[in-house]
Amino acid sequence: MVNTSNIELIIQFDDPDLDPESDPDDKDEMNQLTQNLYKQVGQFMEDLDEEGAVRRVRETEVPELSKPVVGEFIVGILTAEVNWENIIALMRFVGHRLSGKTIEMKVEANGKRLEVKASSEQELLIAIQAAQKFIAASKEDTNG
Image (cartoon, rainbow, N blue to C red; front, side):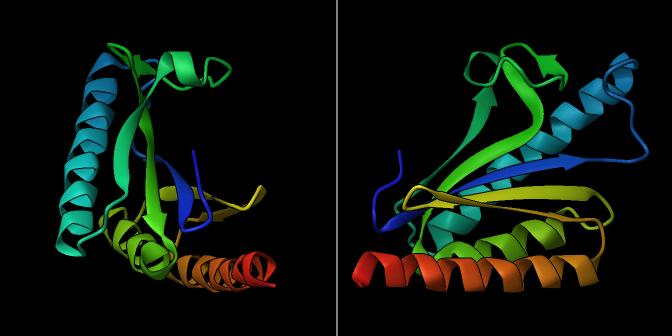
């Protein structure tokens, strides 16, 4: 899972204009948004020379979620394993790609978890600041 040099980031998002649970077209659109973000985050991490991984979440990994599923993948959720230096850049990247959508990010490092939610640029900045503090404290725990 996560070692001392990497952080796990769970990215979950919703589009307030879509109802993927009851509208098949919205479900397809949400799946396409998820797939596009998956590709964009993968390319972003490659551009950063990030050795971590981004992946879509399978229904069998989180069966208690009540999110729509396309095939075996849950729409609106990705995970990424990223190093300490790139986590904030990745959060900003995701925030810009999902502007106007409600974003929930869960950052896990050294057995601790931070959950942040943002639905505006201002809330995203606050969430990133909280993540920076969390990461700094987690690094101190690792080093200290």
